[in-house]
Each structure stands twice: as structure tokens, then as C-alpha cells.
Image (cartoon, rainbow, N blue to C red; front, side, top):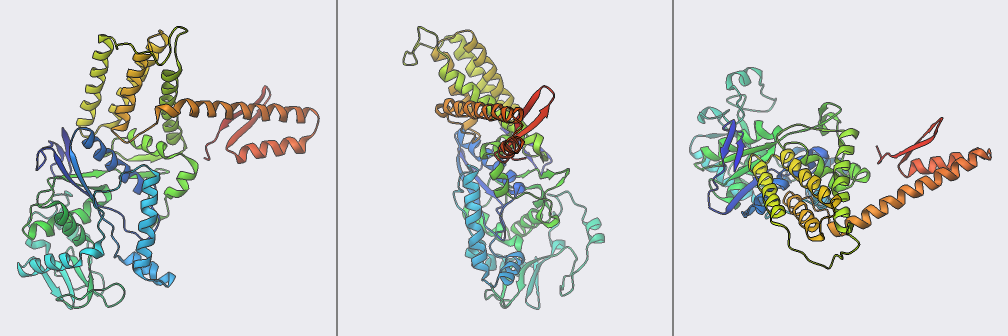
Length: 475
């Protein structure tokens, strides 16, 4: 298995610290608001990676934190007249519900930053004692000039960064790129420390919690590409300056674009996950994620989500055909040996799938293998192959998709397809009645029928040859 390392700038052979086990840390949310699709993409990408590692036989310890102390949380709490803890707990619950809706596995451990203040104070004290940090009027800063490897992870030129950086009013930094480890603060929340009452800076929490739960030299540190600098650069600097061996492989998921621009709350260019889930089923977002390599930008729009839905429909149609297609003399209860040719072909497909995934989790290539299996399975169904052959193909598709978290229950595919067929026929029936109303010049009722269909997600277009319609799926 080879994984692209942000630090190495190339794919590296994945050699876990401990054979058969993977220690993985992924930066979690700052819990001051509901998640948007950018958060969903990152969470889905690392859920796919985790599940595939488990499919390959690894015992994965997956840690994802909650940043529950932050300026944005404090500001929202002040605006609403509640405590920062109330805001944080509210949005932790929203996050967990949203991740469950997407079918994302819960972390092995999900620590809150506020539960590890003592560990942060301890690491900061070590950095001050060794000269890597300095205290000024109750604030503590990390001195980047004491860490020669600063900038290696992000590939940033420190002198260029220095030229563009500025010191904010109230800051007492020695270097404009020095970053806060501890902030003097006497409001809610704040803690006692050797430097006075205050709260931790953002970066220190992930260094402390990742090392606390996974130990030195843990295998994988992940997050979105927007975290490479300064967050992950600073995490690495302070942890290694404190004498720790930090993450062996750094992985970063691509960002989501909406209308060609980065999706972000700060610019208002975003779609909340809750809003998106009212329009599309959760599996569509996982399929959308799988169709793009995790390191690539993901464009979100009507065309992309429709393509994902179409891919899901193709899989479900195959499940339906595989479960229902039988010859007149064959019942599903009959069992037949799968021919050696088919067994060999299935083994070949499984190897091709794992080969794609072992190459930096190349999900688009892996999906292409899945659809090759479906194509071969449909061919054998059309050729009148026995039920055991159909079942073997369907079982392989289910196995491979499940390894990346796309669980489309084969046993429910028939009823799903049947319900969809009934829905289509009902739309056709309503449109026939509408044409009758129009012929009878009962235009008000005809317009009401069309309006009702559009409320239900059916787009109707009147043409000279009659009405055309399609499911608009809420777009």
C-alpha cells in the first residue's frame, strides 16, 4: 500500500508503526455552528480510508477531536447569552447526528479540547523551559526561529511569509509568524496556569490529544487541505520541539467548490449539510465523494449530484436484476457451484479493486472496477446464467462497496426499484388526468395538478408532442 505524504510530496510505502494496527488522528470540527458540505466531504473521505484499512485487516484506532474552546464559540455564546459550553455541546450533538445521517462510523475516541487543558499546560511548560516558547504579559508564544524545520510540511518560504505577516494590536510577538500557545483571558471559559488565567491556543490541542491517545510516531494525521498551514505546520513544530516523534504520514483531503469557488462559511459560499440532506439521500454524497480522488477538489452542483444518483441507480438496478432474474426451471433456493471461470474472474476483479485502493485510495479507479463487475454480471444474467453466478457477482459488488462504506442492501433493491416504478407510473397517471382536464378546458384544475407535481419534485415541460417530465430531486 502506498499513500501520498504531504510532507514527502510523493507517495510513500505505508509501513505502520505496529504490524496489523493503524493509529490515525483526524482534525475534527470547531463546534460553533452546523456542518456544511465541505465538512462532509472531509469526514466522508477519511471514513472511506478508515473502512478500507479495516477491510484490509488492520485494527484501526481512529481519533477525531472536538474543538470546544475557540473565539467563534465564545462570540456566539455572548451573542445568545449562554455559556460557551452550552454552544459547544449543542453543536457537538448536531455534528454527531449529521455524521450518523451520512453513515460515518463513530471515532474510536472523540476527545474534547476542554478535557485536556492540563496536558496542554504541561506541553507549553516544556516548550518554555527548553526555550522554544516565551511568555509575555500572560500570553505564551511558540518561537518558530527555534525550530529549523518550520515550513517543511506546507512548503512555505518563511522569509516570504514574514514579509507578508503583521502583528495584530495587543500581540507581543518576537517574530510575526510566532503563534499563540496560551492566551490571557479571564472570561468564560478560562483556566488557571503558570502564566495567569487564560485559555489555550488552537494548535496546541491537537498535538496534545493525538499524542495522548495514539502515542509518539502514530501512523496517520489527516484533515482538509485548508489545515496544512498554519494549523498542521504549527502542530508538528510544537510537538517535535517538545521532544516527540510526531505523525509518520500526513494526509489532506481536497476542498469542495460551489459555483467554482471554495465552499466556506467565512465567505457565505456554502450549503449546510442539513439542507443538502433534505434534497438528496445520504448515499449520494458518499458516491459523489468516491467518484473524486480524496486529494482532488470536489465540485458540487446539480450535474454532479445527478451523476452520483445515476450511479447508485445503476448499482441498485443490478442488484434487482441479480435477485429477480431466474429461468423458468430454476428457483432461488436451488444452489449450483460457481463455474471455475467465474470464480477466477471474481478473484481478478477483487485484486483489481484492492490494487486501485492500495494506490493512495484511488476510489475513482476502484469504482470503475465495480462497474466492470456489474457489466459482466448483467451479461451473464442476459445469457441465462444460474442463480449462483448472479449471486456471486452481486455478493462481490456488495463486498467491494461495503469496504468503502457504501452499503446498498441487496435484499431491499427489488422493493426500492418497485417503489420507484410505481412512483413513475403515478406521475404518468396524473399527467394523463391533467391532459383530460385541459381538453375539457378546466385549466385551473390542470394548473393545480402541475403545481402539485412540482411541489413533489416533478419538473413538467409542455411541448407540442405532449408533456415531458423528470424528477428534479429538489434542485
